[in-house]
Length: 133
Image (cartoon, rainbow, N blue to C red; front, side, top):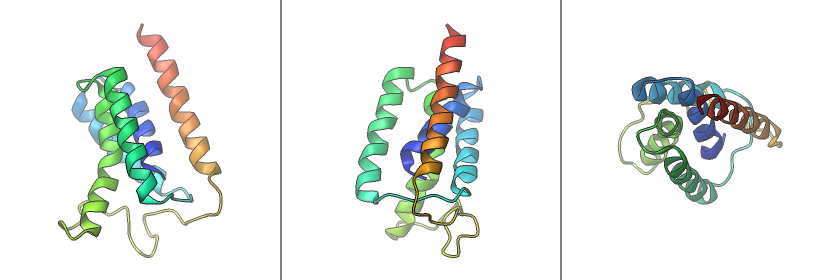
């Protein structure tokens, strides 16, 4: 999944909690679940700036002390860690990215799964935001 989808799912999970720690852990859990779904990744040169922009947007919309932000951060941490380990900056902790696809969903030629997952996450965020007011 793209980093943006992971962040949206993490934010959606975070909005259902009251603890930043639980939101962060929930974000990591949603990352693992989403990565198990067959999907088509995008070029990291596009994914990284888009993900950074969305995380910034979430921080501006909900605040950096919000469970939404911490869920989104948890959702993107495994990809950030994966990127740094690919650059030789440490060993992987989150083993969701392995060569044989054991934990990572198979690559497909369609982005449909990402659109469906992102739509679901946006719906959860919208409903939860409405109910919090």
